[in-house]
Amino acid sequence: MNIYSRTIKEINKMLINREIGAVELTRYFLDNIKRKNKEINCYITVCEDKALRKAEEAQKLIDSGENISPLCGIPYAVKDNFCTENIRTTCASKMLENFIPPYSATIVNKLEEKGAVILGKLNMDEFGMGCSSENSFFGPVYNPWNQEYVAGGSSGGSAAALAADLAGFTLASDTGGSIRQPAAFCGVVGLKPTYGLVSRHGLIAFASSLDQAGPMTRDVTDCAIVLNEIAGYDPMDSVSVRKGFENYLDGIDRGVDGIKIGMPEEFFNTDFAPEIKEAIFKAAEELCQHGARSYEVSLPSVKHTVPCYYIISSAEASSNLARYDGIRFGYRNPDARNLDELYKFSRSEGFGKEVKRRIILGTFALSSGHNDKLYSKALKVRRLISDEFKNILEKVDCLVAPVYPTTAFKAGGDNCKDPLKMYLSDIYTAAVNLAGLPALTVPLGLDSKGLPIGMQIIGKAFCEKLLFQVGHAIEKIAGRIIPGVKS
Image 1: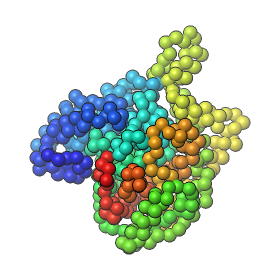
Image 2 (image 1 turned 90 degrees about the vertical axis):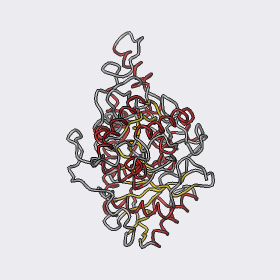
Image 3 (image 1 turned 60 degrees about the vertical axis):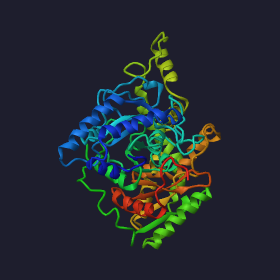
Image 4 (image 1 turned 120 degrees about the vertical axis):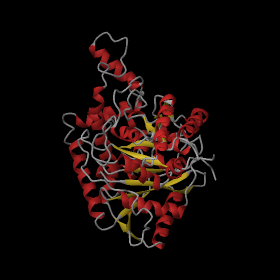
């Protein structure tokens, strides 16, 4: 039975029609992981026994003939910064190399209740800090389209596993672009939901006011299917929004007739790859031919996105990561002779270079004498950016923009050795997190190197339905690229 790169919708139909069983399907993905993971390095932990046990339970639900979830029996994998009960959760860090949580994240519990089958935990940039998935204690993640290139980050493992056909869908987190950028690099669909729509309970914190959980899938319809199952109020998350159920599949194929699309000049006047610009303009043009209208809009304050984002995110990271002290949990240096050495040695050995860099930056931004100059001002700029997005999105229905200045770059190349260059590349994605808005990355085809090109669609808060509608229209126009297969 050929199930290579089948969508959730297609696999669900096969399961219901008894064309394949949940255990057989799970074994298919587990076999793929055994064959391919050494090359791509997208899994940190594989839980084969649990996966097969859950697949048997899912098959019983399917056989019962009850009205089951479309995710019942679908194998998936989770970024390794979501807690999973009795399954190692490392954040790709030496600090948490052997941490086994006593509970699961809310969205993992939701999927388990629906009968989805967890395959394992996925590699990432340590604590979500990076955009290439090379800042991992467990080694870099490689792009399935061409293993000389990075998979993006910080959710590189989530995108690569999907592109390499090592999971039916994946869960990831997005703090400044960590779902959207690797999705673009690996040619899959990635959604950063509105802040507060999907519970963060059990997501190990990087920057709490920016972190958001979301799905990666093979196509836009699958993304809506997964969001239907993971969205919703959670009393365990203090910023979770009380919002009634919304079926994100409703109207997904309605088309774009009458939809107003904004193209921010501050994004398109920057220096990014001509092939990406051409692909986005072509997609916008095609949307207009199907009834949409495009407008040039302006977001003057987004030019301050990068310093604003790195001050706020690093300040929050320095506070959140203060808990890893070698005493309560996490790595503990065995040679420390006193409390001071225990703190110093455990943290300096437990954290990687990029994490230490951000902690230092954040601690400096919060320090006496610099708080008013840096952190307080960054919060004011954040408000300006948020207000500008709100005002523009009252005039247009959504915005389209690049995700990253280039397609995937070479692993171990100059980009990775220049942190400032990497930080500056977040200009297109981090502003969306600062504003708390939803954004959807969709593939537009391949560049001249045979690497995927992606585009993001940005919407008003809680307007994910419209993003899926526009994304679905783009998918029909651009055609779906089969992940991991070169043309």
